[in-house]
Image (cartoon, rainbow, N blue to C red; front, top):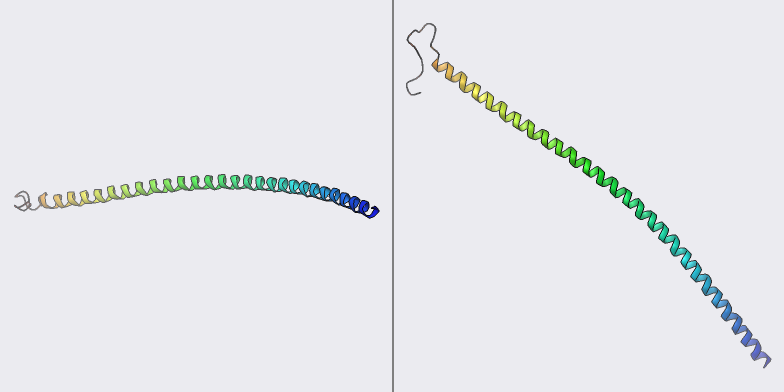
Length: 115
């Protein structure tokens, strides 16, 4: 019976020890979870900052691209206007070439009859 009592006491001590171990494990688990949650939150915050930075850079790049596009459109319009002006100038010069009388020729226009 003494042996039975000793075994019961040992079993009770083991239960208590197991309960303590379980409680320590739960505390460690909570502590680890809290640390992980804090690290995760820091990483999320950093990610948000990086995303905002990238979005700002993208916006700036889009604005610059739009300015370049507008400049190219203006250059193209100016080029077309210059080409049109050159064409009109050539036409005007050609017209003057055929309609202006020669200072030596007092008969009038040298313009061909088909023109």
